[in-house]
Image (cartoon, rainbow, N blue to C red; front, side):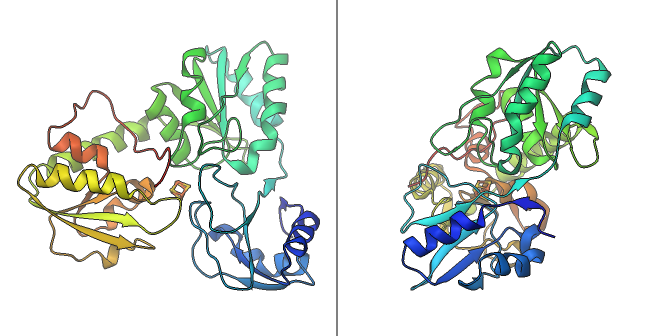
Length: 327
Ligand code: SF4
């Protein structure tokens, strides 16, 4: 059974209003196993499920004569999509009460809490806030910048909702599963983050992982400072396109007597990155530099890390590569 709340009726009406009978459906990897249920829910539309990986609303596909429906992500407001794309957030049907009860029982000293989550739990935020306030805590939900649709929402490339309330809070609760988003919040704000998993009711911390991650990034920066030839990765995806940043990076590299080669790509496959370079600088999705680091045949860094490696910026504290807007 499809375990998310999606308003398929509204979607079908929208697609009909746009004048389409065919729909291209983009799904996150974890939802591909529900393709049959999704097809049935969209009946009588003719459904074409895209087999391409889809990690966010930064990556859309269009096909002549079809509406595009992306399930599981919210639109990125400051992107100029080439046609009307239908984004269907898929909300998880799960309660945080049990795991919140456990958090309270732990008796942690943090009384002012920032709440952050990814889009599938966004509709739980208000209830969590009220629950905490009923138990004597102060709870804050921050607004984001132009890349963020909902208050409290974070993306793997944007933590503005957390940063905007950093002065008001002692620590953050990340509502959901996985560690990457929580690590991002801890690195960007310098405050402790607890991960509250509503499925297992487990509470975990990410500080050790953050330390390990930062040590790894130090290592990458040290290696890049010796590099002479760089591949600059530029994405063709609409929400990852940072060409101006890539051109700035090219100047930075060449002004220090080094060489650069632009590499324009749709999907970044580390195993295919066999260019004659000493290092890569990634201007596309920052998660590629962080998550796929070990799979690249050469060291890969973010634009900020490159500037640190070439002594253009000081390393005072770790600077996460966030995307605020694209070209
Ligand atoms: S750029 Fe990366 S982290 Fe940001 S929305 Fe796209 S896939 Fe997610």
